[in-house]
Length: 405
Image 1 (cartoon, rainbow, N blue to C red):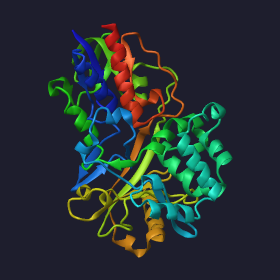
Image 2 (cartoon, rainbow, N blue to C red):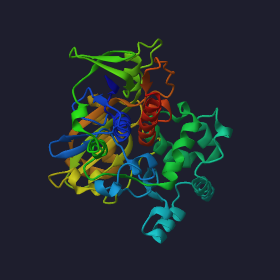
Image 3 (tube, one colour):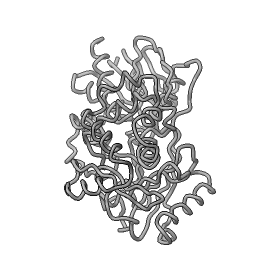
Image 4 (cartoon, rainbow, N blue to C red):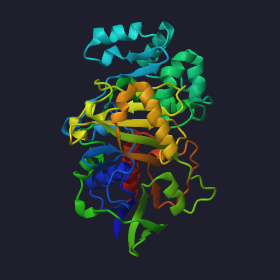
């Protein structure tokens, strides 16, 4: 009998498998899809690398850097900060400490009318503190409440709110401030970027650390018991321990949980190709909260030309929370907004595809699950969702299982 069977081949499940392999634990990992990585993955479509929605990897994620050499992924970072579209035109808000052109970035930050000097000083002070010491004071408040009490309304509307909405994929009034303080230190100390071959390079690098004979794709779990998993193809695999490394909604189903909450946080984006990018800098473009359709614009090919095989620019447009990219009228209105933002050159942009991702992040209010002792859970829904916490959960779960063997 196997020591453990892992159900789910996202980055949590893969990290769990790596720890088992290191400790000599016999295991099998089964993934229902035709690829590993779960939400942290990419599609390869018509010569383009399309990440599963707009994603970035922070080089401050210690669970990642302790496992993978980012240089081996040819990891490159975006400029820290954003280009912000306002009614007064486009503005830069940059972090001089992370920019190679420090004097230029400092001048851009100082002279930008996105935020007052007090806003920038408070953000700088929070950065230096890395968000520490504030959690207890805001334990019952939302991110929106914390931001409203700390910065001016224009600074929040033009920068802070749209940026953090793109992180949490939710109205900030519904996100506990503790989630902000959990993630802010990583943004404060690191920079966001992309591997050369897309976010899929992360799980692919993890798979390279494992025995491929212990990994199975296209194998969906149907039912679990304390010491076995029955799969949709009829096979029953017995093990001393079962690790559920699946999305929260799937874990609820397999555990037959009461009072199910399947309303994960959605993400919508539209991918375009264009003869030329609307801007050349590797930077995130924010539209501000007053814009009801487009929230972010990023250009992966400004970092890595290999995201496109034909030399055209690849543009990822992130839609505002609650919008459905599957709706033709939403896509049409998005194109109109992009035309207002970047002029008639948008008429030359061609849609590659659109993505509506139903479980881009787990629900904010995940109810606790109570599996039997021989069934363990791992996934970032157990804490504040992030790549770092997904990996940390997989590692910690493996160590707990190993203690029982």
